[in-house]
Image (cartoon, rainbow, N blue to C red; front, top):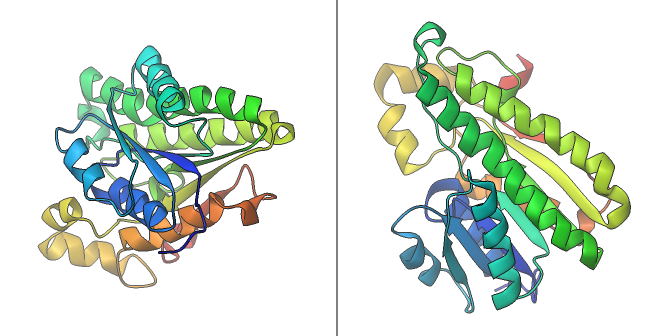
Length: 247
């Protein structure tokens, strides 16, 4: 195991599965103690399976501002001030723009946009007092390009880019960096169920690299932004999309 993040506390939302779990695993392999925040019933099991010891599972609905703040406060009380926050939790409710229900729209923005902001807000307060912090928001290629049936999802992710840039400006003098990582379709178990057959082949053909990104590749980029080496990188949106956003 690497000791890159030895002694650091990393809050990872959406840590129970998919990209969030890959990020939690990657950071734990490098010495970080993980605070996993998720609504999934498998969260505790997922945290127990991580490398290392001393990880903490915190079930919480981050779309509720008070719940998000409480999760950060509990992490502080039980482990200490977090040095890292990775906002990976999210939902994808897709459909033609003319048919998106108010419930689907509200749920998507509440979790993806508001939830990420509430966690950043709460962690940022703690990090600001400590004079150091790294916040990484998992966004999407959908924040920058038009994808059919992604109206709510794209709006939520574009909003995360917006507040990322604002907080970068506000918090830079406090020793906090905040950046976004925008993947193309990630090769997760869920994606393999959705992007199958002709639909999946078409999606791959639209990516210049010809494939989906792996969760481990995303985790590696997140780790760079979460490191001390990235002290002068803030307010950025780092694409990891095989060139999909530039065609």
